Length: 361
Image 1 (spheres, rainbow, N blue to C red):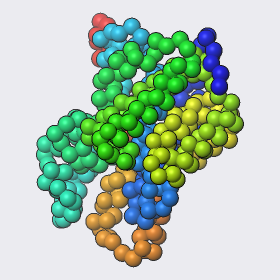
Image 2: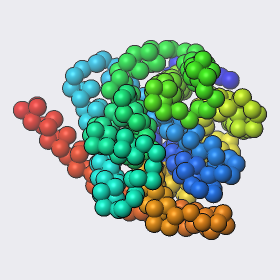
Image 3: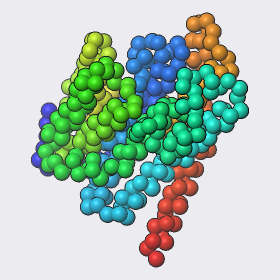
Image 4: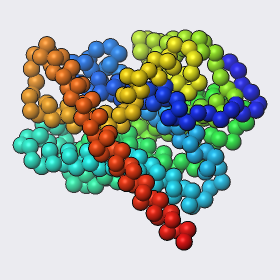
């Protein structure tokens, strides 16, 4: 373990660190596998909800890198630019997928009625809440409509509160202290679960907000630790990842140890070296990371449509179907990335640039 009083050289941007993007791809595929009929029953895919925890930590890290200096001195203009950039990133694809699901619910007989609490899950008020990404905050069913978007709702709250996250995570001048605080933040989330009598990390709703805040904050702290010179030797870091991940998944009651492992995964992806970073930065994994947001929002709709269309069958048939559905999800995600996600982001950015230009005149 090593920390320096002086900041390390400027970290590379996300585009220059393929392993960071690749880690997001691993998280997305883990979530997809978790939601599948047969694959989701296999170890370790039955713990695929942990992909969301990787997303939260990684988002905190990336946004702290990108905006900590820019928003160090709060201004309405800077905050507005930050929020608009996040809208450009998440909203175009989210709204398109929500509308696609709306069409399926309205046009396919029996599609919605198969679900428990169907009237609450697919109600107009839940649709409006999902469109505004507030469905996980209170009152509504958190996993209504496009179920995985509950985490977007939680992250949207983090974006709105981002200056507060920065205020508590970025003033540290030590490298070691913010790293230890990042570990403490995710372990504290485990304490909250224990007090609530909940054994699974995969919570939504109010506890999901606690989950997001602890992990997003841990990501912000991890960036500060690395920017201040904190590092771990690659071989020690990779061994700790394997040890904590293995103990967390295999030992009853030790699941919370997976979260410090996720923090170390992000550190490995950012710092490079060792065995893990080259794997995460490889071309196939990087490709998954590039389309990971599309994978995350597309896959649930594909899986639900497949179940409505084909129903259930023998286990062997479901296993073969799952493999085929993975291919379909990857193809549709690749298409949506290029046809919806990228053009939507570019369009939203152009609007933001025009608004900024008008404001300056």
